[in-house]
Image 1 (cartoon, rainbow, N blue to C red):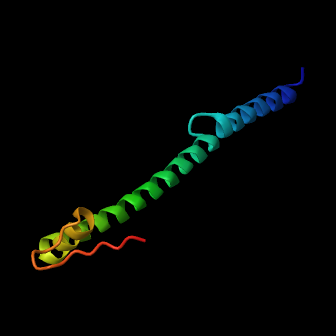
Image 2: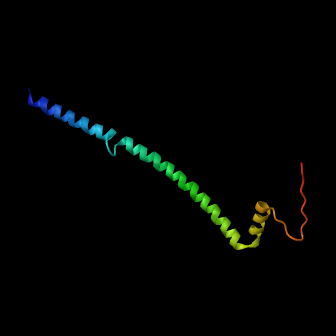
Length: 92
């Protein structure tokens, strides 16, 4: 067998091995794409949590600031009214 053919066969085998590792091996392109998709999903969840936290923080500030926010919550969530108010219920 020609030594040149052996060198070519060895180089082709090495190239095939490297290509396999690139596409299917640990840390290959497939795994990188999976990690990227998971990272995008987590970034979306983080953004949603940040928005929710900002809304809750604003609500906490309103509740700390004054009685208006507390009164509003008591009216809408608990159905409470002041002593000097008259309650009217409209049925449709």
